[in-house]
Length: 323
Image 1: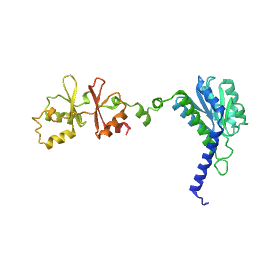
Image 2: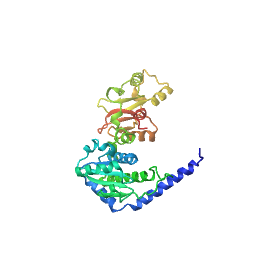
Image 3: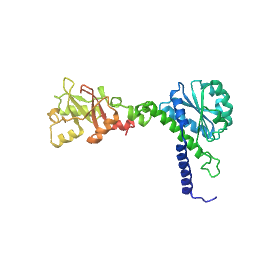
Image 4: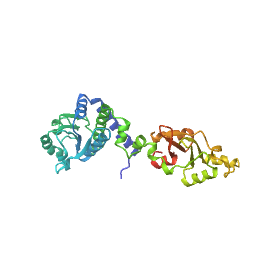
């Protein structure tokens, strides 16, 4: 087997592709802007179409577009002739990905697309190709050589097409004023989505789960409440449902060190009156921030009227996947 310098090979490939991307950036012109305007004003969806390696790039681009506010889906050109083309309507815009611009599966599909009367655009490496010439707008990658030393495996060409697809998605994102909370709505299961959507009230302990005691409760009674609820804290709440203090593990240690008589001492004598709280409608990430800044592991959630509604712990935040 031939001995090669893997690192040298890798650097060569990456350098070739990075130089190609610089050329692509310089070559983009008013056609790119016109394409984005078409897509922005389109009443339909964006169909990313391709086959083979170009199909993979088209698939990824459609996913990026959808997640950034531009409804899109992928159609494999090979499957399109067997029914998938039926999903395309005249309101849609089709972006064809084909480095050669001569993909047989796509060319056979062009008459059908024209009959549908959808807008046809393309991203190719040959502006004189059949697919390019039959597109309303063609974006030329300008790639004439692959990073593959045999100039066979799609490498530089797919990288360039992918970059253009990303550029389209980001340009449309900016034009629509797409924000991080919009992104989160399309990624509710991901960590980013959780960070931008999950609120304190979604994961806090509330209702019967909350350890609550009255100001007249004895320390021994409070310890039973803390133990039964298992949250390491008890809320001291008066008759008007006002939070006047909390009793935590730290307060317990201080009480025991002072040799307090647990069956005779009222909770108001040993509770902490300075309580860290957070609005129940705040993002859960805000709870993490407060806990870290104050080196604590539990917060009391309150409503706008300052009355307690729940308890949130660092353990709950860890369990939710936010930390």
